[in-house]
Length: 104
Image (cartoon, rainbow, N blue to C red; front, side, top):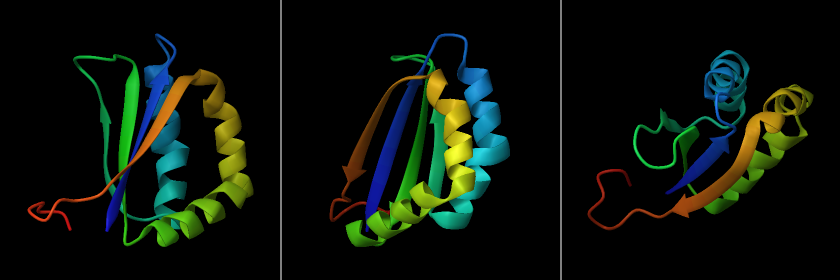
């Protein structure tokens, strides 16, 4: 099992718009094509104007297959055209659970 952490730092003042777009369009589509949403978060301390999601996959191969399906979907491409101009930076990390992690 792996968890992908995706962090999006958005332009100041644009976080409410990003959250609205994700709630209305992005997350429903991602849940349909990816499944495995662990959670979605914003920050109160640290790098403000940040939106983060955690996605669970059984393997890196499963992640690759599902992400490719998402990237080729025309509905996702239309969604990206709306949100990408609002992003300042993006960072992705693959997290591997420790032997004592409750999420395995």
